[in-house]
Length: 337
Ligand code: UT7
Image (cartoon, rainbow, N blue to C red; front, side):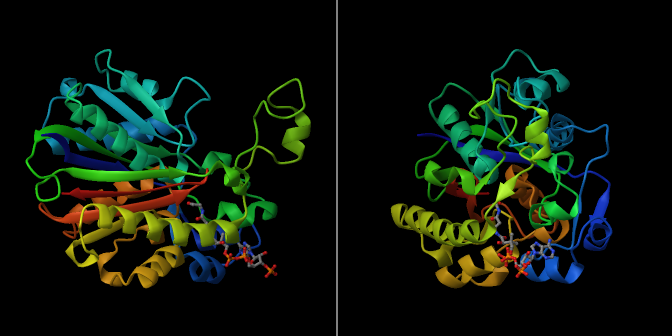
């Protein structure tokens, strides 16, 4: 049976480090509050000349190198981001031009923190259908240019960082997906009833106004992300545990069989709670939020690359990922590295 496997991984974070102490100088917050409530110690923010597809380019070049393929062998890009370079076209098109790839399809996905798992699942489906062979899957975000860095923005702005991660998913033949090295499966969900619990209202055309953005919207701060943190937290724990469980049951995989858990990085307390609820030993969870903050669609591939470099993720390991975010969207994925 046709399947896909991850044959290369890369990541990139900007050089500029902003610690919690740096944020104390911008807004009414403290290193103690941020660390206790989220686990974040520092994050990377881009310099003025960097956009989302620039970060993606660096991550993609490393992924292509680690896959050991020629870039011209890539036959599709799937790009997950909530912070595209521009409203349109998608960042996938900008990346395709920067990589100077042939006229391959470039798909942008808008599933926020869950974006990378949706993107891997889409890539897997194209590859498993036999239509594509080597798909570049990217998660990249530039949050820092869109955050309210005044005291009013402290609830959201301390959480987010910039970064990018990428993998090359490549065609393979397997007899049993659960036993061989491949992308086993993903479960994808959404519930739009909760869309406004975590969202970026403006610019937008659903307001009773003749234009997508005006001074009044800027004055009201509608161009900054808005979040009901407590609601998001409670749903994140419940949904991440639930979708991991359903995937394990479907494939008759026990939690003990899983070697490494690469979860989305929104809050260290969310991941600890999921571990507690499910009975997963903390040492099996690989977290990076301490140094990068929440990089939404980039968190999982960033974690993959760091885990490989630290020797925590090795060939043959069974890996489980779960993510939750704006939409609400949530997803889980099982893959053998
Ligand atoms: O990627 C998916 C999307 N995001 C998430 O999954 C985030 C989910 N939610 C969370 O991680 C947490 O809810 C937060 C980290 C956002 C907030 O933690 P919390 O424990 O739920 O805090 P809170 O919102 O209840 O705020 C507690 C207090 C409040 O003060 P009072 O009303 O108790 O006096 C806030 O005003 O902390 C205050 N506060 C801050 N203080 C210092 C809020 N933000 C800050 C801040 N620095 N940055």
